[in-house]
Image 1 (tube, helix red, strand yellow):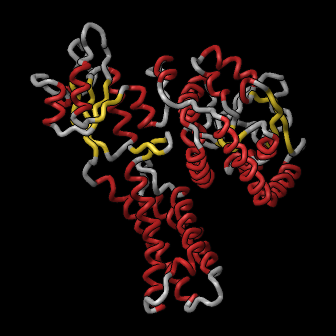
Image 2 (cartoon, rainbow, N blue to C red):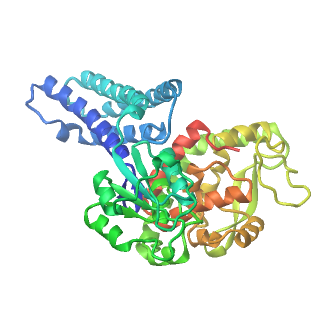
Image 3 (cartoon, rainbow, N blue to C red):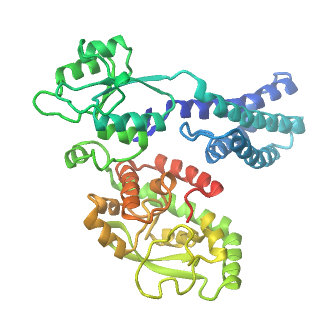
Length: 460
């Protein structure tokens, strides 16, 4: 994992992105050099077009899920996503290359070369997604501990990162209850440092169940770090691997004395400018869709096109949110707030489509322009649920230290939540966002939101 502006990315993800961008640019360079006889340089002539095409391919492949190392796809799913990506990428290539200056020779051949390069990149990406699982592991991880916490670390690592090999579990001196498979427990005849060196370990995750009475060999762990082995505690492991602040393993001291939670004026100003620019652009682009949605709601069921609710915003303040109505007008006729459930009979026929494609959220862009919300942030909850969840879940109020968002890290990482348990899971992602938020992370979330909308993941 590589940390980029406080956000962890898989090394393989970065390499895949750079490789694909280079392939598209290289195809254009080779075609231009061949057609011009190598006497001209492409960058002065078509630099903006190259950058636009490379950025567009990055967005399309990201939205298609081709850069997610822990998102396994069947061959049918991979080819279906590739078909959608081609339907988007080929017209993009044609449109971008049509903007070449009029004095450029062989524009048609250059356009065909660009489209061929784009198609090759997408087809290769399908091949990579189907063969990556058979490649050797890149990072060797030793888990220091053999109890329940160590078992959880092993499970999450195997599920979240296919490029990791767990070399074994080194039990602590005072651990008695072994929860991991016996054949994966390492012998303790050698010290932790000697064992790590012998097994050529890249990382150690400290997952001891019992830390008292000398269970934590600080000197040996320091020697491992000096030797060049990365050493992580449990809270940092979950933050790095899952993009979560795991409530059961993050204490107040770790949150207070660790890095993150930067809410400076510069970050706030940049985020606000970004919100205004993007929400204005999205409102213009989405205006036809919003008009059609309003007409469909009016035809399908009685009641207003929009509905408003009170939601909790930054610092616990409340504001009125606007959404397209996707339920019957009498959805809460008894006056008791209720979460939407799977197969909720209150949702109208048009409402099901609006929710599936997240079109019902578009009027919230007005809230973004007004400053009540941000484009990216924790989901705004109703005061009734906030009061309930604040009493039941530790650190729940921390999510209100930033503005709520139309989309967010929890929304793209976890399905719609309708229980207190779901709220706990989503809070762990929200805390990660509040701790590590940056413009870079906001852009990553927006890309992943496109993938969520295209696949209908987590809609309810």
